[in-house]
Length: 198
Image (cartoon, rainbow, N blue to C red; front, top):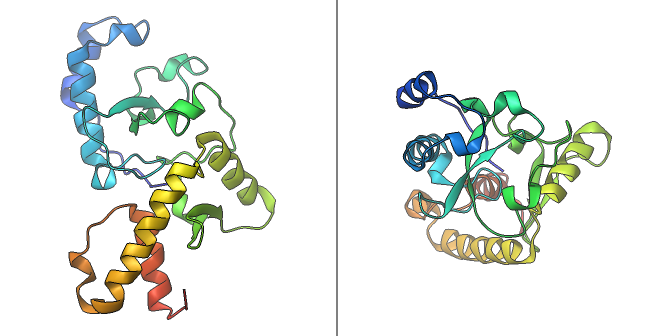
């Protein structure tokens, strides 16, 4: 999961809200949703889904209400409650749906990298903590978003293998290697700096 550093609400959206009565999600036109998605993608690291970290674009993403609009109707048009999310079935926003618990790690208000590391053999995202509230938050968030979906773990494992193979022969030019799964990459680079054996 990635931290999202929110910027100011887009001026176009502020104007839209002042001119239109916002009753429900259908009050948003396709055009304003596209404008919002564009801004959201720009503020998200590498245009990645903040939950699973796969790369997304305008066509393969949707606007996710972090706090579900059904349970938090006052946040229906709150820009700080929006992220652009992948549309993968069975994970991320599609797994979360309208479920909510305060244990959920909100990527806008918290840095998920303070909670998670990776098992480099399985590709799973795991809690840094072994017990306590931070462990419960990590466990709840992983399960709610289905972040250890088999397909996702396989993609991560492939990335880990390719990154480690590349870095073995190109230690001085890692900046040239494509950035996918930004938090996983930072974790792998940290392990290398600490000279830990894989």
